[in-house]
Image (cartoon, rainbow, N blue to C red):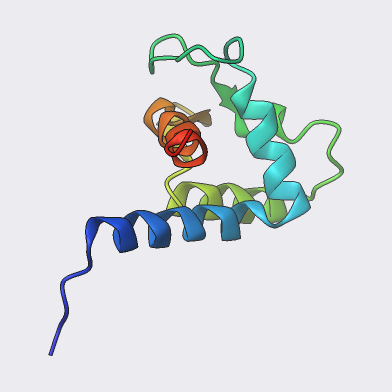
Length: 110
């Protein structure tokens, strides 16, 4: 028998998956780099969001290209970032709605 999850349980499970993806220091560093698209407290839309090519995103993080790719796939799978092929390059950016959901998650009862 399949139980329907309440909205609260669904939100908790989605956020837990995101936090699990962010529990790796390299993924957290990558996500933080991507989050710097706009000033704190503001919202970026997809057109304004800073997009990084995968190669540029890994600069200075001492991550092998194959490992970088794995970490980005995990962030994408968790719904934290968007990825799009643009010719020979893959661009990555933070999904703006995800940032709003994370802010809302921590400020809902304030």
